[in-house]
Image 1: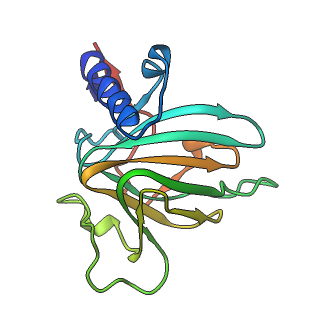
Image 2: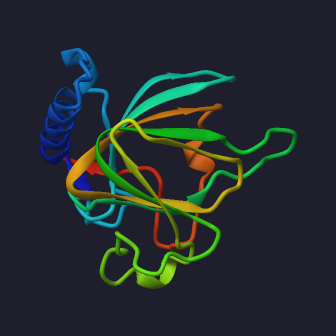
Length: 181
């Protein structure tokens, strides 16, 4: 759980990261940045700052702020009924991001899962994204990613985002952040 004060502080920090990456957002948008801590009470190790520009029944565009060595945990975007799972493209705007997907394991990966949660990460094919690089994930693809030492900003372009339907390998994760006074 995060306090309202913590959320405001992280929103401000995320806004500053976006500015560092040359992404200008309005003051009102800073207040709309979701601080996703996955209810693990370790935001700076496992979490994201997420600003959604648009999320319609056809497309979605977001900015992701990542603190140094912060991890977005392993998950996939499943299909449901006639709707395919989310297809998403990540474009690194600033910093370095280590993205992991199924495939041949990388011998010496650039990232490590957060301490105590290592057993919930099992895809190890590494794609390194630096400023200007991008990668597209197909629906139902297991993946996770971690910022480099300086943190990172990533733009995400995708089909409709239904984050509440994401499936995580860590059974303790809850997608909706709980905020207390």
